[in-house]
Length: 133
Length: 388
Image (tube, rainbow over all chains, first blue to last red):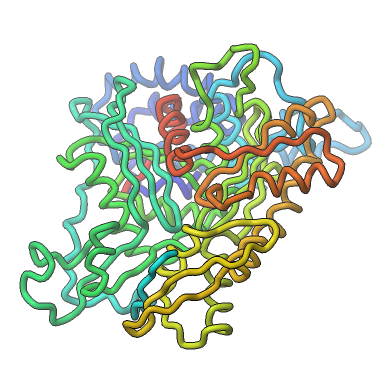
């Protein structure tokens, strides 16, 4: 995500309500896990309400987003590594995740035209997966 | 017959930008204000020409539809006062070409990606001014990028757009071409195959030829092939052959491109194709049939293997319909016979009932049209912020 953001030096955490930080963190985690719809809902709902109650400079909010996005990416990566290490004799099945890039083209969807926003979600998820790789 | 004039155009390195060039005032950093008018734009940042379509976010109007040559000109030292209107030191697009003798011309893009950042930024600023002459609007732009563009190339675009556009979204060009080519009014009709559902697009531009398999999901890297061989490569082959056959002909690359666009074809060699050119002020008639044919046929040699590679990726349930929906777009779609030659090669190789068609006269705009559709459909969280 760092490549997408060009931000000023981060503002001190003491100036940003903790509730806003937690909500931004949750949004970033949802996006990192490919759940863009839930992330958008959270942004439009609880986060919007929290921001309305706070007075944040745009640069400060952008700084929070950039920082939490990086943390979310790291957390997911660490989680995946830990999962691998916890496997072994117990041979626990891996957490099932939808592949970001299918290795073989699936059959075309017969029902209706795919929504552009959904296609963009898939594109962004693929880009995020490529950056992690 | 065609008359082309040999000129003394030279390719100028970026370091030749004179110190006296007045750069436009930097666009101020975007303000977050709900009162700012929001404009959405679709932008095809092409190697030889850009296309931009734009309109207000709140409706479907298209208020801007422009094609701009991808060239930036910086005034040479010592120009006579007033020889360029307003004594401008920086011109973009057609204006730059009109004053080519007074300018150092730079093509900011090569092979589909930014090669000169400063000039690319000047080009993008000009595009912004076309979209919003007031300079006050918030502009969100979907920008087409070559298929499988590297992250460095994508970052170059973001850097050049920072401070110019408020938000961007970078999307592969052949996918945008399919989106633009899609006739939304016919979706759902029984005989209409949505190109986004099952098609193969071949976008032949100036710098790259991009092929993309599109089957109802966003194309993966394996569904896209970008070849660094397209219009500019054909021009180079013709130039080299002309230099061999007609040494010191003095024809500029621009003149050769003009000849190619007038006479390009693929398939069996056609002779004669007589072209009148001015060399040193005198008219000469050159037979360029074989030269042009050989150069253009090289393009087919490059594209065809990529085409069959992507066809092989399609599932058995989808391939029959896919073969009926191969579309050639971009400037290369104007090469005479390219659709028939590709179709015949597929049939000769045993592919069942292939049908290759041309995108049609609107080929220059499909990527930008698709980009604007994507801009209108993108959700708030899908846009990428650009903050200086």
